[in-house]
Length: 350
Length: 287
Image 1 (cartoon, rainbow over the protein chains, first blue to last red):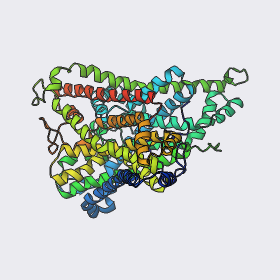
Image 2 (spheres, rainbow over the protein chains, first blue to last red; image 1 turned 180 degrees about the horizontal axis):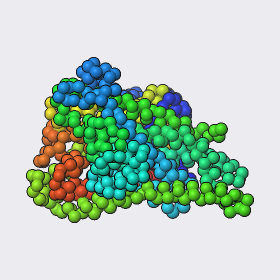
Image 3 (cartoon, each protein chain N blue to C red; image 1 turned 30 degrees about the vertical axis):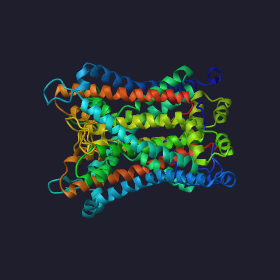
């Protein structure tokens, strides 16, 4: 079992109101102020208190203004492209820096498809890992295994990219892609020349990169499922798997969904590793063997060489699209995870 | 376990075994990429590891030898400057959230910090470009540091809040009861008690930004030579790995792998130290 079951997730959005008092929280900040003020507060101390509070409030305000600045800069810098193309920007396939005519559709397509491929691979594996770590794993193995999964998230994305270029792509080209083409070629997803790099490689790399985050949040959510649910299922004669399925997974479902969406948020914005293996071609092709492009990778590739106001602002507008999409995705994920881990007794969902 | 009972049908026993087997298999297979990546980085990186790598600047393309001393130095300087920006702001806002922010405005800050945490690093790079590079009219180490510093803030902020909330309320009350002013209570008692946890939060943030490449591409830009001036473009280890990986020369690839080995050792070292602190302080950060 984990240490504190109700611990909130640390790095994702808990939105809307938090319960006003948590375990170790003062009942309300201001009441504490009152005590020293009336008894022992000298003028200097009160002033120092004010100054200190002012400083930490300033730090907090800085966070607000940074996010405000990001929004402002993105809107401001993408203005030429926004006014020139409007909403058509999102639905057009053209990418012509010479004629200064731009549309983001191939990049949006590439971002979505590579992330979906990643989710298809990562979700079963990471939910399995979380189940194994919380429910099945022998004690001696648990710490080692969770450390290993955690280390996976500490590898920088440029090293994933390096590995993707020199190890993963040749492996995919020689072993995996011929296999997929032979047995699943009829789906139309696995046809065409086999380069190794391309949409499939990007998906696989992304899957490895988002595994740890999905696994660790799923673990947290599973741990929050009350023990009695498990005991009740077992007492009714369920096998271990039936217990996991009916008592654990069913109760944790919204939270696991949240973890998956959070992983999606990471995948959408991931830049370096994808840029290095996806092949960077702005085309919409059904086959996953084909090279593609994502919103993040086109910015990384072309921004420092872009000339002309429209070209630059088109790239910034893609960043804006990316920002808005990840914002929505992360907020949704935070809401879902929070609904499970806020410490409410989980209800048995019908 | 109930499945040893005779009453359970073959079908249920089989599906139980199959499912548990698959779960175990899945969990074990997840560790395979880690070993593959670490193994490759060590195997291919170690052969290029020599003294020159740490002391010399890159040789022109095609020539053998040379090192990444300027990139390592540039990374260290930028991480230092990013820490100057990120650590005080992160801890300060974490203190705000834990000690003053248990209310509506605290929730707004909390939500905003989480938003900032989720912003893709390339978007933060673009913002730093617009804020610093456009104003200064040239790429610079400062711009890179600003981008990295911004990325540190939410991680440190939220983890600091979490560890401060773990400090028992009675300790605060004891200090206040002795007539110690509130700010002094927070600085000398609460922060002191949670210091192990805060150090781990800093390391966590450090490990996160040490390998960041995307926000540096159009801020720090990269440089073939030494640079110690904050207002000039500078080399960084991840940037150097990125540009070498895309060159068509075996020699450059070798340098990229060795750079990867150095980078990953730096980060793994930080993470393992972090785990050590986290275990000792009984305060878990984000994991």
